[in-house]
Every structure is written in structure tokens, then in C-alpha cells.
Image (tube, rainbow, N blue to C red; front, side):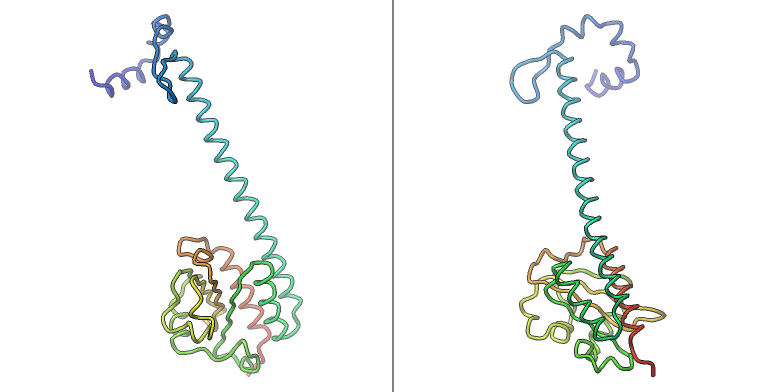
Length: 218
């Protein structure tokens, strides 16, 4: 019989262990962490202990993720309250820069809006380049990368562009795409393609609503 056939037979006939209980007591197998032989019952206990340690590690990981998400959620909440309290476009821009830098530790922030009357009076909302607008129009959700979007770095980050190693691009939308919130860092691991974007999208939704609300009507 092959080992697989033995394992299959024992799995299908658990009564075997009741009928041959004395034999099981005489079986010794190698210790998983050493050369000595141990009874099969002791090996089962070791297996259960290993599984318990693995479950504990997973539980600690889940708790850690939960605590991190709670902390991020609190920061997003503070940003939302600050944006609600901003009374004009300048206050909105100041709030975005302050909260993203202080709460989220984002060192480089760029904001652009187009087809938005009154945006040009705020330095941070300078007209976007054609490359930036075309890139943003293709985004269906926040996009993170270790490479800058082609043709956008100088437009968005000016003199700092050559120092930046990771980027996050968040489209601003209501009925259509009207702007872009771009975040960047000198740390190549700050933003990366596989990172989650749920909170980035929420930030984009809040920033977009606050900016659009405070733009002067035509």
C-alpha cells in the first residue's frame, strides 16, 4: 500500500483506532524538532500546540489590522469635520494640506481642478496640464504606484518631482471628473500598487465635495 492509500483508509475507518488502541500506544514517531522518537499521542499534542500558536498569531494580526483601521478611520473623521467647518476655498485648501501632512504624514500634496470658475485665485489650484487631465480622466479609482504618471510630475510637484519615489492619484468627481488630489513621498514603500484604496477613495470624495462646494459659480 502507498502512504496515500494508508492515510485514505484510516480517514475512512476511524474505528481502526478504537480496535487497535494498544498498538497505537506502542507506536513511536520522530519528534518534529529533534531526532528522538516520541509516542504518537505526544506528537498529536505537539501538533495541536503548533496549530494553537498559528491561530494566536493570526488573531494578533487581525487585532493589529483592526487597531490600524480604527486609527485611520479616526483620522478620516477628523478630516471630514475640518472640511465641513471650512468656510471658503482657501480654508478648504489649508485644511487638506494640514490634515494630510499632520495626521497622515504625507509630505507632498498637489491639488488641481479644471472647468472650475474661481479656482485660479488659489495658488494650489493652478490649471492642470493636458497630460494631468488626460491621466485623471482614465482613473476609475485611486491609483498608487512607485512611478509617477507620465508627464504629470513637473506639473504637480515642480522642483520636488525628482526626489519622489511613490505616488497616489485620487480623482475628484461629482457628476464628472473635475480635479485631482495627488500625494507623493520620498519613501518608495509609502504608496504601492497593492495597497488598499478604500480610505483614499473616501478622502477623495470628501475633498472633492468640499472643493466643488466652495468654488465660485460661473
